[in-house]
Image (cartoon, rainbow, N blue to C red; front, side, top):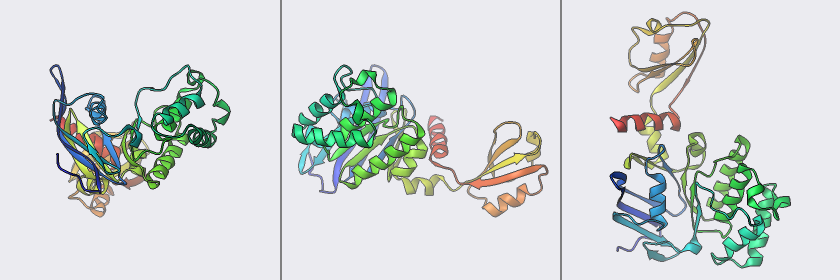
Amino acid sequence: MEHLSDKTILKVESLNKSFKNIKAVNDISFSLDQGDIFAFLGPNGAGKTTTLRVLLDIIKPDGGQVQWNLNGVNGSVPPSRHVGYLPEERGLYPDIPVMKSLVYLASIRGMEPSEAKRAALEWLERLDLADRAREKLQVLSKGNQQKIQFVASILHKPSFAILDEPFSGLDPLNQEKFIEYIKEINQQGTTILLSAHQMSLIEKVANKVFLINEGREVFNGPIANLYDDFGKKHIIDILFKAPVSESTFQGLSHVENIKWVGDCRVMVTFNQDSGLNKALAELAGIEGMSNITSHKPDLHEIFVELVKKSKK
């Protein structure tokens, strides 16, 4: 096993995992450097959770290599005291008081109980849950359970955190707060591997992206490169005064897709060979428009397109 540089803290090479006749993970490779917020994305059943469980040695791969380098410790299995894990499924004890559960989990990862209690109380106060510290997890709402689960995964200040669907069950306001929490712990020294379906939130926090579909790599690299490679199209959102038909758009050049959003709203995608001025000039001859806006493809739109292409 090669010795990783101080900068690289996780390297995955040619990872494979099958369940009976299903190839859940098919020859994927990627690496994370110290300080990354790495978004691991894919549709349901793409192989994300299987990969995360292999990384944590919960299940064994059929082939390939996982190599960790956390705080100078090299190996195929990460030291538990240096890793935090927020699973997609609830993983805390439902019938134990919140504070007792948090302190116990932090202490088995090497944190002094008194320090764990103090840090847990600080987090509970930030999350407006200090008055629920003695209550059992099972009486909390789904969103509040998710908050406690998040605290449990990062309370011991791990060098590396795997957050699987951290925004699950949270309302939009709390989702935005969690973005700030993730940035904060990252700035304090925690490298993060993040898996989520909320693309608009991923855009705000991740610096690298790995897109997986049907177990295979679709994209791997800096999020800026993803936009450079696949985000140069122009999407024109047009609102009409009355319903329009397909014939309205006949004769337009460089049009890649036309999508109806209701009878009076249409989104026209021009390919990257057409500049914005040319696209708008072509649309200028269409009558009945009441409003028009333009934007480049966002992460959600790029994600959907790449997944569709990977199925062909």
